Length: 243
Image (cartoon, rainbow, N blue to C red):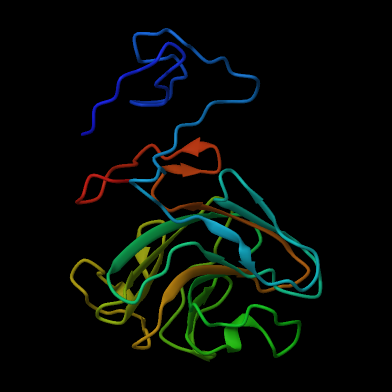
């Protein structure tokens, strides 16, 4: 790692954990102005996805984005689904993330192509109908490109954890809830995927409010180990030691 010479006013904070005490020899400590200090693993050399406030549907009332852009709330705008994509997409590779649900069961969650038009309105013109989308309607079933595919999970309730795994290299999509994968799938083994993806597409995480007038919240864990401001007790690291 590079070495630095610290000047008199220099400081090193948040280097090895959730602390604002200067870890250099200068004792230039910070003080917390209010709220709770929450550690994040997201930094320039270890970047995780978040939801993207600049990549959302612009119809109706805007959703609320909070907690480091990892909590999305659609407050029931009645004219659009408040869809929003994640910040990181890819055309290859394997990816996994989670979302903790609110009580309402009209979430849409899954992936969509980077070229999907997000500015649709109510009625038949909605995210489920668009090409290059693979989504789970949490009160129903899995849909690919507007058509229903294999099976459905149990009804989603408050604080359930949705699991999304995508193998873009092998064009497979997996969805689960509270540790149970739809279609008895095994993403690690690559078996029983309930839906396939389309080739040549840059896929990104996406969610939306299928009920239009509902108030729904999804708290995403893209690797930082939090649902909102609550640490995930079982948070671990991937094979690279990140997130």
